[in-house]
Image 1 (cartoon, rainbow, N blue to C red):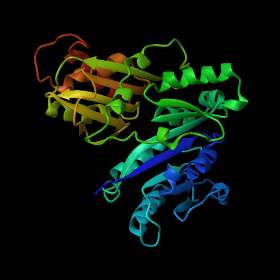
Image 2: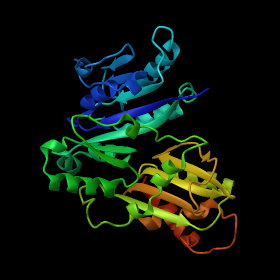
Image 3: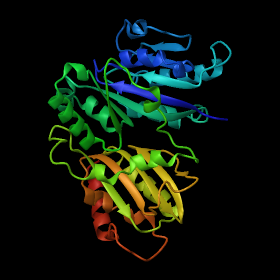
Amino acid sequence: MTRLPVSIITGFLGSGKTTLLNRLLQDPAMAGAAVIINEFGEIGLDHLLIATPNENTVLLSSGCICCTVRGDLVDTLRGLDRSRGKDLPPFDRVLIETTGLADPVPIVQSVVIDEELAPKYALDSVITLVDAVNGSAQLDTQPESRKQAAVADRLLITKTDLADAATVTALTARLAAMNPAAECSTVTHGVIDAGVLFGAGLDPAARGERVRGWLREEAYRPVGTAAGRHDDGIRSYSLALDQTVTRAGLSAWLTGITSLCGAEMLRMKGLLNVEGQPVAVHAVQTLIHEPVTLAQWPDDDRRSRLVFIVRGMDRAAIESTLGLLGWASNALRGGVPRPDPQAYARFLATMAGSR
């Protein structure tokens, strides 16, 4: 059975989420979408602002979707599945619009971890909107805004018609420094091709260009101080390994790095050469998506490549974990040197002491 894609539309207060959703729902390609709108406060209004509501629009009004109504969200998704094609018209995807104060990570966890939801729904895209006029100040002062930008698959800079070109350019550079893996677009009045926003999820026959987009090494090269001191130490790193890794080593490494570094590792994506096969890996903080063996390599590069978006971790700390991967070959032909076991032991002690 094909799982239904779930996309999360998030962004700080006033970033234009409802405007975007209105435009999307006018697109014939979105006619089969079920929509969940979350609001904060006793009186819900956002759902009333949807110009083209459909029978599959559901309002969650009991609080912020990332915390107090997480259970309500799970219940709603379960109910949508049970009612699909019965009490509700058939639908082919789910869009979740969050409150501006939401942390997207618990929402992702709800979709991926819940035993009843996981076989029915698959996470597709985290789409984060950033206001061109106020976005830089919000990134400076609001940790929720920084988190939303750091974990996004798609970044949309909105209200560009109200900001000067230099402001938009500076904000684009800052977001690229925080999250190089995300595709960044500018949007005016919510107008954008729906096809640009979706399709970030993986399946065994994943398109090669999707994985290549994760691993653009040039995007992870230092770009000065664009990320800035106000970004909670959020940084991105790209690593390439010539070594072929073992399946057991991959499992051990994923478990180790997420358990030890989960809070600091906002997002990790990669393509690993696992005993000769291309395996895509993806983690959001402590949540590990099941590794996916691709049908074929997306390009001629057979190195293992990993990209990280982290908070408060330096590159050496990440490299010190790589010894857990377990090299399938003893030959070391370049790339990141074999991690020092003593350095890794010091890293374990440091992480244990910080908790």
